[in-house]
Length: 127
Ligand SMILES: [Zn+2]
Image: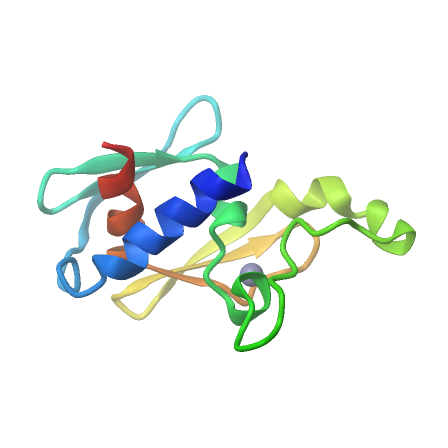
C-alpha cells in the first residue's frame, strides 16, 4: 500500500469527520478474501482489507503526534522483524461503545479506535 494513497485517505477521513459524525453501520461482514465489509446507514459501503486497516490505524503512535514521525511501517528493526507479518493479522475486533471498533493485531497492537465516521470517511475517498 502506497504511503501517499494512505495519507490522502486519512486526510479525507479526518476532513469529513463532522459530516459523518452520526453515521452508523447497518451491516458488518467479512468477505471471502478476509476484508471487513461495512455497510453504513447512508447506504455507502466499503471493504477494508487487514492491510488497509493497519495502514490507516488512527492511534497516536501510528499517526505521529506533534513533532514526531509516525511509526507505522517505518523500517523494522531486526528485533521486530520476527513479528512483522503479524502486523496485518486481525486477532480480534471489538465494538467500542456505539461509535466504533477496536482491533487487536497479531503483534499485540490495539491502540487504534476506528470510529464509524472515520471508516465512512475512508469510503468517501475511494468512491
Ligand atoms: Zn496504531
